[in-house]
Length: 124
Image (cartoon, rainbow, N blue to C red):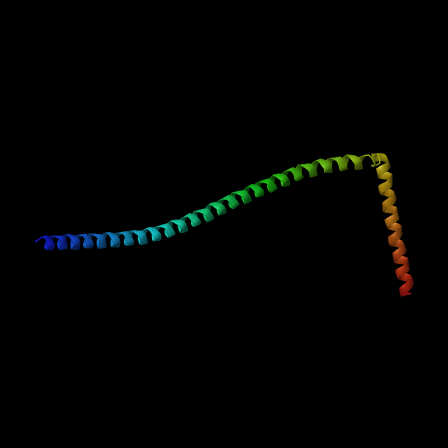
């Protein structure tokens, strides 16, 4: 009986070891698959985080650009005011301005009359 008992114990032990090996193999394969899946998800999250960071960075750049455009507008207004002040230094007083305007009108009339005379000379 001793031989039969030891054989039964050995078979039970072999069966148990087989089950443990199969369980370990299945667990290992599941672990490898889970690790690959986890690495894939981590990579996806890194990509999303990078895109979000770049998007936020681009948004910040756009905001800075709009701020610069706004400051350029105010700088343009200041320069326009300075240019206007500078130009006003060279404007004639109103009494002289009316004389200059009349002179320009007379010059234009004279040019028009000269052009008419030249036109009549060509047609005659």
